[in-house]
Image 1 (cartoon, rainbow, N blue to C red):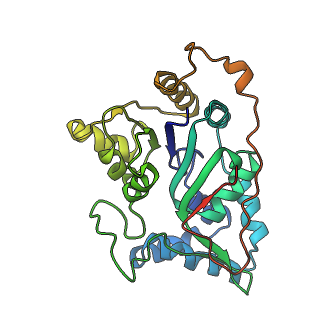
Image 2 (image 1 turned 180 degrees about the vertical axis):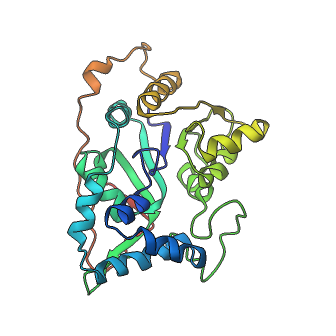
Length: 274
């Protein structure tokens, strides 16, 4: 099923929360975050908040321990392992940051399931602070998309992933930033918006704008059922049309390391060695 690409958003799609808000709230910095939010772009604010947390004595290990407690539904984990075992090409396109995503996926044994993680790069500076940079440096130029936040246009990433090849795409997301790539998908592709979240609302307002089929979900269990159903519809499915899920679901993703050099920014996307 190498011709099927499954693209996941991360926050409120793989995990059942916003990882930025989760860290800020759990480490007691919500009041400062909300005070600064009106005056700064979100991505820049998260970088500022990581420096503020460091000044308050919070360490990288403290942040990592909080991230490991972020809720991730077991059905979502099972669906990821199932799709990986079938040979689907799994990618992440997220406006979170690499350290947050990597920490959570490693904790749940899922990181090796993904070919690459497209997100805002992060690094640890010489003072031990986590720094977060924009995927697209909007201080130097604009990515030119009016629908997306200044630091990331997800449709441009999806276009690179497809790179002119005929691949069926299944796209899962919840937020406003997932609307632009959903509009760019075509017939034969699928969009899986989380019901009653911003992406779903935008689609419902004018469903005729999308060419891809829309299949909604509300929670981890529904996400698993819908995703497995869509995978089974793929023309690249197992030749006899049946797959023994009981055999595939327990398969662990390969735990390939994704090393990041301290004090050096990570690339905008990081391929996982196979």
